[in-house]
Image 1 (cartoon, one colour):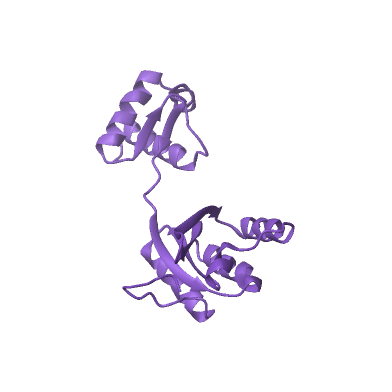
Image 2: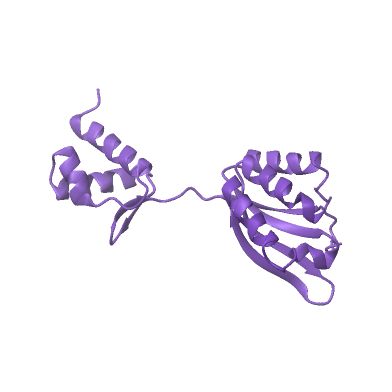
Length: 178
């Protein structure tokens, strides 16, 4: 039978998991009807049981689970960029960057930080409204995306979707970027 302290600690843990930002000990104390010191002790007990709770100057936060990343080599036309990025984000991926392997300049990388269809739409609209072209234009459409996802299974799903769309390029051990 869980004790009152066990139920409170479970409640604290759930609050921290749901929180959008740091949660101050005084706010938790008020919510659970205990002193701030009791909250500090509860946090210590939760940490001892492997809860990934970080103490910051603004309050307690849950440490994010480490994301898993994979680099995909792809090739497509400029008209397919939206389909490519949507395939990735629809499977739960976040496009961290795009890079090309240029034969003269070497590896050139640009941050993207695209994790939703809205991000994809904004990127495509910005691209259309500018005189710039895709980075992959310098390598005949060949490029790489570093993608973050919550699991290997999600990355496998992204890989499958890119393959189905005909965009995934098999990587060779001596890959030169083309």
